Amino acid sequence: MILESLLAYLHIAAILTLVVFTTSLAALCRPLWFNADVVRRLQRVDQIYWGSWVAVLATGLARMAWGMKGFGWYAEQPLLWAKIVLFVVIGLLTLPTSRALARWRRELAATGALPEAAQIDAARRWVMIAAHLFLLIPLAAVFLARGVGTV
Image (cartoon, rainbow, N blue to C red; front, side):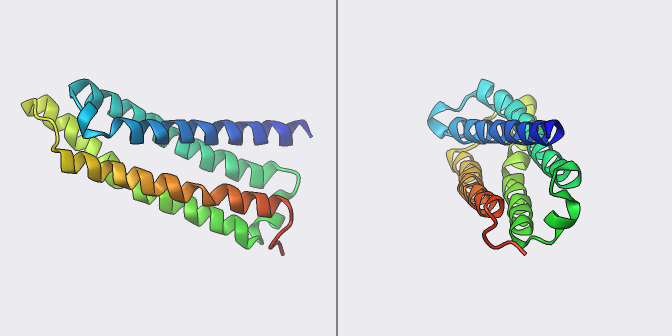
C-alpha cells in the first residue's frame, strides 16, 4: 500500500510540474513581452518541461509495473492506451516549439536578433493545442479508475 501511494504521489507531482511548465511556456510566448531574457528563460523552461514529460511517462509506467493492479491488468485497458497515445501526441505537438526555442537562442547568441511576432505566435499555438488536448487525459484516467470502459 505504501508503494502504491508513493507511485501515485510521484506521478501526480510529475503531472503538476508538467502543467506548470506548459503554462509557463504559453505565458512567455507572447510577442509583447518578448526580449533576450525571455529567450534564455524559455530554453530553461523547455528543458524542465521535457524533464517533467519524461517523469510523467516514467512514473506512469512504474505504476503499471509495480502498482496494485499490475501490468497485466493495465496492458488490457483501452483507456490506458488512449492516455498513452494522447500523451505521446502531445509531446510530438510541442516539438516544433522546442525546436523554435533552440533556434531562437542560437540566433540571439549569433546575431542578437529576436524572432518575429508570427514565429512567437506559432510557437505558442502549438503549446496551447497540446495544453488543451492534455485535458482529455484526466478524463480517461477518471473513467479508468472507476472501471468505466475497462476490460
